Image (cartoon, rainbow, N blue to C red; front, side, top):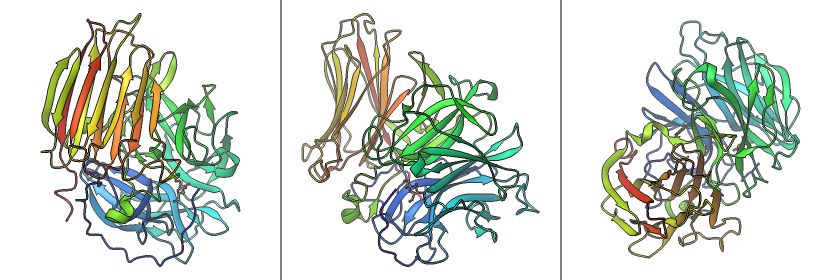
Length: 519
Ligand code: FRU
């Protein structure tokens, strides 16, 4: 849900030269060339050409939401990006291209691709002042240009609150399956189709107690259990984004684990699980076309409708919003409950630079001055061993500070109660005084320390911070922050640990994903 801004004419579909040098501009994350981005859309991997496509909700004319197009970028590795011309635009005033997905129709089920096995179909919502309908468009050039289907819309139920189709291939029934939000009803609908043109309503899913004022951007994903990447050991997970009314305020995403038989999703859990314990991970979408045997990959929108149109990157640098890091996921059991794990896609390998730190400590501080890292982006890992599992004690804290202004983003783990927190209150360009919903801190309780080990790792990237908890990444916290000067120093401190407990700290500089591709 969002407030439409004044209608401005669609810009010509041109690739944008852009300035990615601003001190708030993430270097390891995607952000739009200029103006406003929200949800990732149409994520698909073109295995044949080795290209990841990212489309996104884009207002090409202002740094606030509205005038929605599908922006487009491509990447060989999900870290190095090339901006492409806008992929989808409205045909008339007040016709907006809302969120949706894209698939490769390799068997030409749609009939759009008589001579090729790499045709792409985008399935998206067209939003007008009175109606939301589902539409398709096809691309014969690998996803760079699209033609809208002449018999659109493919689904019209006469509703203004019906959006964000996510389509996947269901091999067992030989059908395409669409998950879609009946936003106001707090219901996810499932439709099936043999050909992407003709859709049949199959079922509706909701569950008592699910939070939210509107449901948006559902994703039905088959997720492998415990890292065993096979069909037999996968379960279905239904991700639902809600706005407003997320448990942490504003927008947020949760998931429900269960089974899907081709027409019905059957939840196997009494309660939903939050996808992220902080406020800036919304509307994540899962890549289609990821090769068999590899874990599913998501990209989310690192922002929150509560304050996204106010953050200072707009007036200062002419853009608003970045994506999350691309993440690979599996399912694991934590204290008897299913948890979706998060790991940066391919371990950040294609942008991982020099190792800057590799130290062990039992008490006191370790410091790292990373002002020489030109991207100002750093990955870090903190691993604890020898934790007393019966009565764990002590704290491990971290603090990213600006050597020039003293601003900081900090966080830490208290072992005795498993409390893990992160806090952006020490950064001053945008604060809770600017928007009361821009809450400073987020926290969670980590699972018990089982075999006496625990770890957390993450990335800080100019104005986006992401942390993954546990060696399996069974929780993630994504937080934007806006300092007046770059944070360029890391301090890790240990205090009050049991004398058998040791902490090892490693950190790497990250290379910019933009240097080689962007003017
Ligand atoms: C979610 C959302 C979607 C909609 C799009 C419009 O952030 O509100 O439901 O399709 O954004 O930009």
